[in-house]
Amino acid sequence: MSDHQLRVSKIRSGTVIDHVPGGQALRVLAILGIDGTGGETVSVAMNVPSDDMGAKDIVKVEDRELSQAEVDVISLIAPEATINIVRDFDVVEKNRVVRPEQVTGVLQCPNANCITTADEPVRSEFTVLSEGVRCVYCDTLLRDDIAAHID
Ligand code: CTP
Ligand code: ZN
Image (cartoon, rainbow, N blue to C red):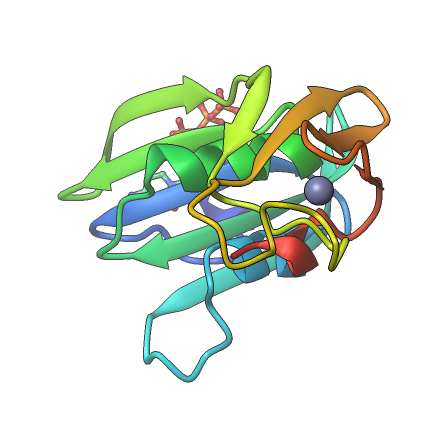
């Protein structure tokens, strides 16, 4: 796409999460804990035509880099996403997300009787499957809206 067709401006510094499946951008923002009240400068494009994906979303968060835990959870809803780190207007790093085999300490099990939600020093741990994520301790399967279960 040439520059005059850009839907949202380039950013000076921060992170561009690109190749997010169409319609998932708000979930990406939820994973990052961004609801607008924190004052971050964020640009979002949704359902932009994409040669390889049909339609894609793009999230640009200025002056912030993502933690590995955040990238791991993003990979669950956006397996093809690329994380671009921008400095002084240049993309200085581009990484495709990798679906981890496990996510530890990031998601909260929805089962109130699970040992990870009891008052015990046990970190949550989920196995990543193609259909969702499964709690290692109680086998509860999370399919949709994984973002709603972020600790
Ligand atoms: N981008 C941005 N601000 C910049 C530089 C890049 O917002 N200063 C955005 C671009 O608009 C694009 C993404 O970051 O959405 C990746 O940029 P770039 O690597 O230049 O684009 P492509 O080569 O098209 O990326 P890919 O090969 O990953 O599709
Ligand atoms: Zn559990």
